[in-house]
Image (cartoon, rainbow, N blue to C red):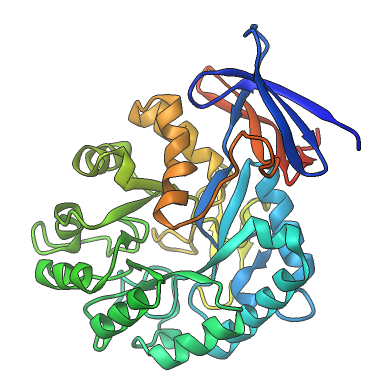
Length: 384
């Protein structure tokens, strides 16, 4: 078999030479550092990614699923993302079940895609129906948590749902959270406005994360009686943070990190199904129509309501370093190893016999450049 060699500076600042053959690492040895070495880093991880290039995970069916998963996957990989939870937001539940079945069937038949798509994040439909708190989700598709309905969807996917979002204040939510947690499924709370006691009860029942903290919130809230204080105060909750530069002012992210610590904060893209597309107005199924501005800001048409993000999770690294004054290594971990650990996703290590999966990148003058992503031994890079 042909061997390929990669040199770079690891996350713990070691200069190494990695030999790859047949999709596996066959050696990793130290080398003398020199000025042109890139960083050689763990794959980026995204626990909340809704689609890209006009494809949405919640709209997949037997006809388009393989094409969509392949196209989204390549877009992710050239941006350094090598593990992702395919996120299915609000839509008619029969449509979500079709999507879950389609994802499961494609991944059952394709080991490479199955490695990339580490599971499903069921963001919709068990969210608050209230205006503002439901964000850009259509209210007619929002439902109270129903364990049997959710279990059927999960079964159709091949038991691939690794994370489910719930509004804990709605009827039946706490019971649902307890059953999901007891079944080994990670539970996040978001698009919701519970009081502090309900948040405590949700954590006691098994909730462990907050979906895109401080987003999915009403634009105007009471200064004290809002869930953000409870999310910050509850030690059992890790915070998901959107790092595209539009969702969160840097000072909000800085406060979140100071309260929780870097190990209890993780970055997500919340990428819209039209992430990577040219500016314009686009129609969504299950969500209100959205507009992409020239600078990458996506919002509901005619409103100052966010509608996901245009950027992938590599953008979060730049956001953390440039605007939140986080060192590069910590920023990368918050977009890679920390979300992986929180959600039980295994990342390949730089050791013999492991999957050849890593990112070669440069970070200079505040700008992150992905030279190439090596995934299962295959190279992915943007075309000039």
